[in-house]
Image (cartoon, rainbow, N blue to C red; front, side, top):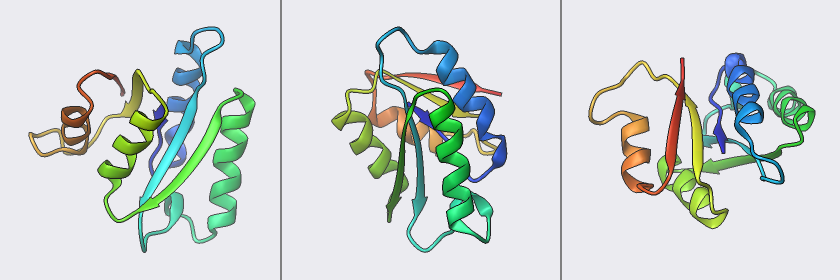
Length: 117
């Protein structure tokens, strides 16, 4: 599973997911945005969704776009429902004990996390 954020640089994360995918393994590209916020920091959500769809389809990945009040809860539910064994994330500005990555990893102890700088 590749978690993408509100940046166009997410293409490098998707490429890493394609590189790491094993034969016959499903790959999910997931973007979860908190309710009330825009996708990918763009004014036009359809353009942002089309961009993600194109990136995912080029590597035969499944795109999931989620809206939730709690992003970590939504990603945990998605990972558990789909039997995700690895999650690829970009580095975060906040890398302390309460960071997004730490909160997500603490709830998915059986999942390997790959952080791409």
